[in-house]
Image (cartoon, rainbow, N blue to C red; front, side):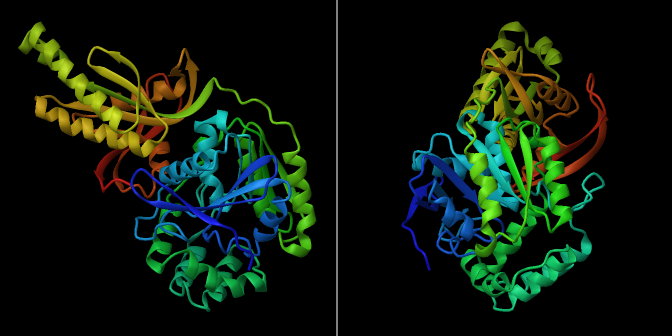
Length: 448
């Protein structure tokens, strides 16, 4: 088995992320694993091992195991999407990668598109093998898996880590029209054992099935290569669908099955793509989560207190909000009277900030309302603006006292973050087209 030196990056919350760096090419290329992940075994995994080994001739290949899996810290909760992005960012910073190509297969590409949309200046391009923006079926996503597949996948997870797991997994994949090679079936038991324990595998599966990154894709302005095997027409269709949502994406159907004997077509399209001189990203747009808050009944409160006492109360309110923004890494964009407008590069932290403010200001004898939305924002003199900002403000306007309301987009992006939501139904947002489904944040578990 081919081995490389494994090192560890320590996260701010004390988790050790295992990573490897191989190759000395002029281009940095990270790789996001799908459901299986172990930096030692990745080089031998039939789907991507041959490609990664070949790419070390021209790239500096950077791999890491997500927390809770592989060689990374195991006794920690499985990560949500936002945490995966933060851990990817940490590894890139640790190895000094300034502007990498973000590569990945299946769900392994999800953190890449979020990072590229949030920090376009640090991403050269994206390579996404068989992209999946969401796993499950939906009326507007007919390629997702349905109940029959989920049932068989559940049965396969009962055998996770055993030598029979590969057979059960192949049975589930057959429902989706995918044929597993004998080599993958035989190695699946070992790979599953070395990826995670059965309980973590089930939780990772649950988190992924609740995730949907489609709302992020239109904000990805970096060049992207989407690759799918032409033997699977549905995978080609999904890649074309994803490309239709990404302004700079192209689809490359390839022959073969990504194995060592069929590597040339895949390697050829990747090398040609990497050889393209990268365009400078448009730095006037970013993906951000916008948070709006204001004091409920402020006019009546001001009238009852008088102007001087009201000003002191507002100052104390502002101190609470700014303290929370500092803790949860939010950026204050504007204040208007008793209202705040802030942005975050992660929706889970934005929700936790809003919940913290809503709780703490009650000690001042006041209540706030809060609303959040994630979308593409224009940067005007360093401040976020645009339709996403307007939507965030309209979401907040629909919140009741001490409520934190979020859009569907935010809910989809924080799967696995420990939040529970109450469906508040569809709403018409003033000045915004269509009807928007909103959710009230009901509970939050411990931070991840």
